[in-house]
Length: 128
Image (cartoon, rainbow, N blue to C red; front, side):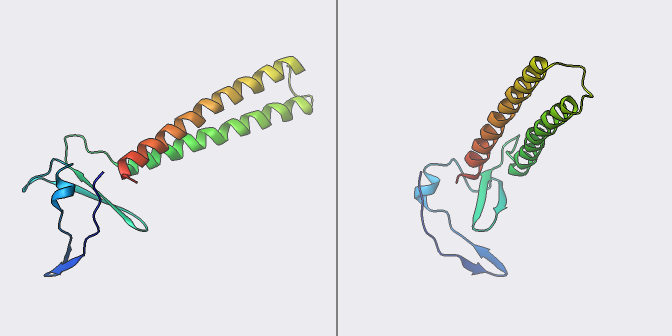
């Protein structure tokens, strides 16, 4: 991976950074190509060459929020099952409760893996 430290300069009312040959040697980018720029606060900017289906870090961030909410919902389901059992409001016995909790934990673990995969995908897109 090519990396360079460059100086930002002002041209008119715009800040400009020149892409070096070392960076361009690793990325197919030519004059006239279109790029997508995304701010990744506090110190990064992602520049991606436009393709028909541009990667969008914001979408992955939203997908992560959905997966994290699903993960938390399993905790709520487990707490609810145990609470109903403990209060006598459940028609299941302790073996069935144990099986239900194990199933919910297993599903929660699958969501945990999906979260890790999305974090890796986001990391790759950001080039961090």
